[in-house]
Length: 593
Image (tube, rainbow, N blue to C red; front, side):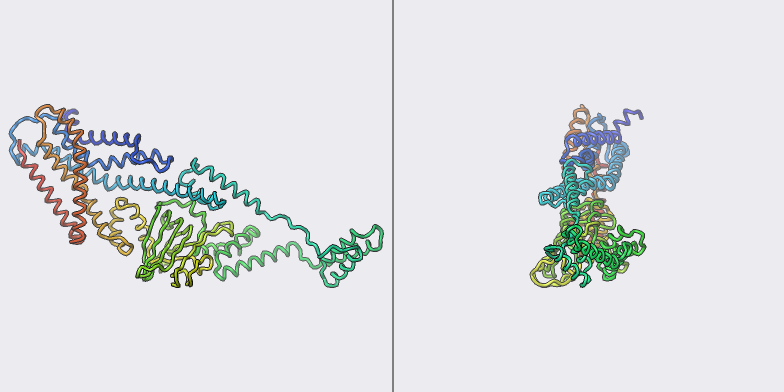
């Protein structure tokens, strides 16, 4: 077979046609994207990925059209071919093999390339949403003069778009203001301490100095004697008396004062003792900041290093450092809402943005609502930042911990705490009992919320919020089995599984139908005209037909799952597709010349 015959064969036309249309779609979508990129920084990747997604979506229609087109570009002899004859089979053999190859290729693209491309597109869109949200909130903080909060949000922006022109100016301004504020808060030198009113004359100064000496107020005595020395006339007996008294008072001061080393050691000991008491009382945050200062004062003390590590470990059970969020940029969700069981009721968690890593998640602008079994609101909590992680204890591995307090790693005064609104007097699980119509802030017993859900289920829930097509086959199976208690219907995931595995089968069925249609429309004269007409019309016709078949089959699959159950419905629909394919093959074999 020569090269021309190979190129004009059904397989050759299939690859040439689909690749040419794919390149054309990629170029078209690169120049004219269907949707504007979420950030200019993502422009090139967004256009390429968008073109790939459109090509993958159009691939079934292009593949089916490629099976029909060869019948329009070739003159078929007007010979008699009987039904179910070997000659008919040989005439259609290459077309049937091409249809099978197209179905297999589409299965590979549908299960591997398509989910990756969709996931990339979703990631870019959500990162753009998070960038715009963080930049908008940073601008609000700048207008309010809250430069530290603005700098924190702008670090998130810089993580998504390094040196982005939309946020660089704000970030530089925030850093400058923070440095300026730190410089203004440096303590000024204290002025000298005066002892009561100024003496009227040298005699008054001497009398008051003697009184201070008798009362063992040696600093006051020295200060008053020094003033008397300034008031005395040169060479007078009073001058000699004030000098002698000042000298005696200063000697007494020096005799009572410890050495500089003793003073420093005592201060360190007292400070370390205070930190140890806080550590022993499980006041982790206070202990952390005490030992943080002691590390600078006495870095060689091994006790301080040990106690500091213990305070950090305890602190991580009740709070987290705000700078963790700027370095943690995982899978992003915006506007995420979770419905989780909580005791006998439910808890609803809403996040403005949520960044999910392998074993930790960070949320911003969180709102948590607790309801009883009757749907009555028990309490509502708002907090600017949260950290979500699994329990470290092995016995509690099926629970999540939500840390509601954020701290600055170096500045003890910067804290972000939750506000809890209680309409009546319920007990707040895992937080403390709060009574009365009040707003509780730092008086809550704890800022940790425990939820009865495993980390794996939580991440699976977060993945479903990106859309069912984003889930892998394994995740869809797990979601159907495990997410029934979290507000999701298992039947939807089961229907999605049936729909996915039916996609290649539908392509093969429509491919066999298109071969039958092409055989009926095969050209005996003027093949170029009919082929060009097929090039233009067939992709549009088959794209609409394929979408119609998908809609009908999805509704049929959902009805079957609801009526028969997943296993029975899957077997029944598989048998239905098999019978339909066999019927179309029989119809194809019954064709004749």
